[in-house]
Image (tube, rainbow, N blue to C red; front, side):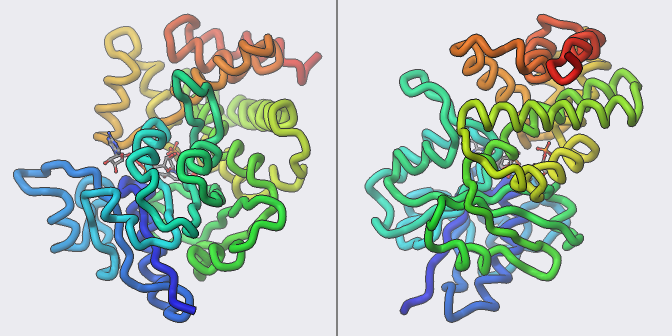
Length: 353
Ligand code: NAD
Ligand code: 13P
């Protein structure tokens, strides 16, 4: 059996951190993987030089993961079709707002028997098709099997090789779980595989909304008890959402790294939290987009957009009242509600009735 070629679609903060892992696991498993890994770079110019060329000469993504070397078997490629043309495993790791466009560029241009794994935390929306799981969007456009990897994985800490866990979600009886585990599992990045793809993916997507609420709470100086309540109520809304839209999830999935653990790490150390904390302080003079740009310098906070998408979906079934936290985050991001009113909305939570 020939070794599998891997392509990474994306090279942001998480894309670059995961490239360090994939560079290492492909090299140490030559019977399973081809160690030459292509990584798609959305080209940009940094101090007069192309980012792709900087990566291929210095082996560092100086913009999105400065100070960390990428393995030399990771090759930056600026054409996404070229990146993926011989690949057997496509690792999607781009901000969710770009997934439809990028997948369409790949349509009909990839190996028919390739598989994908999405590390993207968010939902997919299109004017014609409405809101979907990112994994469903990729599967429908490319007609290939798609798994997901989610977890408590702040990219800078993963890039420091600090011990953590992640969850791979696959469909029931989907093959390839063991091979995908080999691609990501290391001494300090411990993988569990669960046959519960939708719940795994939705935990990853929805926790970004909860992290925004945690950021508002931090900006208002409310302390750790309030944040713990936000995490718990957020968890209950995530479970409720999964049961409403994708019934049949295993309760145990919510206690995997993709669930409770990711909520905790994101609500304490994530970018969504940071941006929303600053929003409370500067919202009178700056827009959320301006604050995101200033603080994240090109990286993306996906919670506000996900909140908007989720509320659109809830409206269709008139379910907003069951999700006060998700709804309040959306309203605060759109300046329809003051951050100070978040707690008032939570007082009427169905969990307290
Ligand atoms: P990021 O937030 O660093 O975003 C920047 C990336 O977006 C860059 O690679 C940039 O080139 C790319 N980009 C900008 N404009 C683009 C365009 N028009 N088309 C395509 N790409 C464009 O990205 P990230 O941190 O790698 O996040 C990717 C996904 O991984 C997200 O869904 C995120 O939620 C998830 N994730 C992130 C982390 C983390 O700690 N950063 C951890 C786990 C999961
Ligand atoms: P942020 O995008 O809020 O930084 O969260 C990163 C993450 O998903 C950690 O698991």
